[in-house]
Amino acid sequence: MTFRIGVIGAGSHGQRYLRHAAADVPGMGVAALCRRDAAAGRPLADGLGVRYHADPAALVADPQVDGVVVCTPPSSHFALAAAVLAAGKPLLLEKPLTGTLDEAARLAALDAAAPHPLMLAQSLRWNPVIARVRELWPLLGPVHLVRLAQRLAPTALAWQRDPATSVGGSVLLTGVHLFDTVRHLTGREFTEIDSRHRQVLNPAVEDLFLARGRLDDGCWVDLEVSKYTRSRACWLEAVGEDGQLWADYLLGGVVLRRGKDEELHDVSATAPTLPPLLAAWLAAVQRGTLPPCGAADGLATLTVVDACYRSARADRAMAV
Image (tube, rainbow, N blue to C red; front, side, top):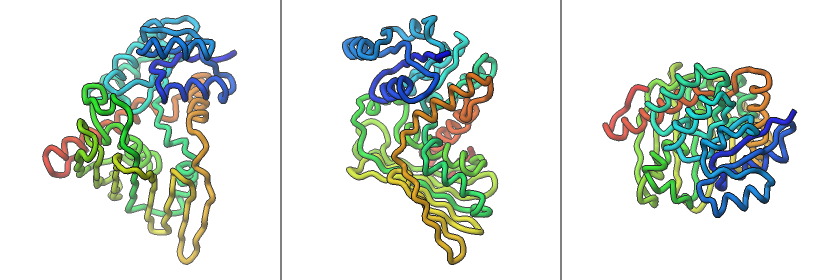
């Protein structure tokens, strides 16, 4: 039986979900979409052969929609996610979990009582390079230093230049990828963060941040997001007692060094992450198991985000 999804927020990213759900995930199909811009939403729905809903509530209530994907800006996440959970339908929610830590705590409480636990779309977990790094991680021995950097072009999305809609800038919108990846790879939690940020080209929110954190095993973490450059780069480095590795999760490739030996792992980073992410969500729904990334993960990440903003305001390190 086909699991039919409805997508709320069928902009550029939401359309990726629509395309992959319709063509690349066995057992999954698309039933409906909701887009605020009706002039764009109706033709899109007609072209896909699915129903168009102008109101998110109508999509959630649609009896032909088995599960809902929410791809809207962070300011709307809490209300939309709460509505889907209240309807008792499976939910795949784009990161971040919510716009604020208070909303994240409230949503996590609602999720704990829902018949279907939500899945958070931390898509970087399904990047092939990150997946290989996780496989190699035990070879490093105790890890005492992790570095991640994500350098991207300035945003072309108007809502990412509107604090009322985006809620935050690079710390909230992109930093959550880095915070979650650190937790995913190490299995540890942040205990302290010292973060600074500023605006370079974005007139409304930060597009550069640097942070140094500490995990609960003492490991140091350096994090950077630069979202103002014409070039792109996404890299990760980890230094352990038994070895070290460097990974490029934009262009591909992992280098593992242990002693005098160096291993080159030719891992492509070009495979889209949404098909395996959607498949993992579908499997969790069908089996009635917890999703691989859920509300608790989103809450933990928002705790780090909140500490970053508090640290920047106070100009000192903060407990997470």
